[in-house]
Image 1 (cartoon, rainbow, N blue to C red):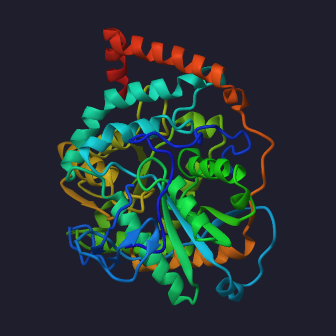
Image 2 (image 1 turned 90 degrees about the horizontal axis):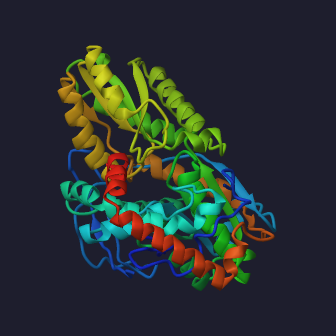
Length: 478
């Protein structure tokens, strides 16, 4: 499913074309090819929920009304609300004016490898992001060599995970379907709009999406990250990429943009989550005895304590709002929150999902409903990490009845609210302002950059040849 949209961000299956890896000191947390023809029709039932989206052919980002093929896949329904950040120039007043302009909505997501062959370059893209592995300034020249080392070491285990869910991530297809559903929802509200998809670490990359936006001569743009809560490592990283691109381009630097930085607090999102939870609770023999177990993607503690990342606070508030909505419906189940997907030797947000599952089993909890709260699309962390690894751990720990709430995917109330969020954000769109420079200006010296890369590559080579270092990395990363 697609709407007028496309692709975009630096790649490492094919290395990024531009120097978007440069960090932007002004961002902090607050602001802080395959050209494919995809066609999808889903009326699904893979046990995670029903779906009702159609995906039509698109090429280089443009929506064409005729479907070119069909395949089945999961999806769901849709609605949301937003914290909006804006930049720049002219203030735009009314929704009616939107029909006079050429409006674009850029949907941002993480991306994922579509084949097992894509896994290692995808991991390289991920770990070469300075918002994922935050190195001190003095050692930033090691970012790419270190990313290469980690991606090579981690790829075998990651490939096993993707093999277990069919050989690749479904994230691109589901995001395409969400984009198409969003376009349809906006058009139902009398807003003609082009919707673009930009992935951070795999195709279609954000860079490509932005180039298509330029070709389409979009006059106002809403940026909608598909992350309910803001984090440096998700929304913050994507915004940094956009800031770098827009700062360096005359057309883009004047384009009015509104960025929806978070939307976990929107009534439509909260109600959609409560709807799914309530539905899944009814599948248990004694719904009132079920522990509602929220599992969110973790971030390193340093992001929160040192960099001021609001992710933890927003996540806790999000859980509170969802539980308040459930209580208003007479659902008073116990609940808990834990964090999954930690990587490496650093301290991550606690409690950890795997440890809490064991503790709940030891406390005598017999029925548990897992809720993937920071994910709005099915992908490896829901389909493999939760559905396979954590389910097995829970059953081994004494939990007898296991259930899992499906991701929102294309749930209609959720998509409708995302459309409302885009409409509400549009009047405040302003041009991104040019920054005075970047924190990496010294890297503009080609000789200095080559020297850094040479010594960084030598160090990475030494690490790869050192059995002790490889064992140490394996111990921390696997």
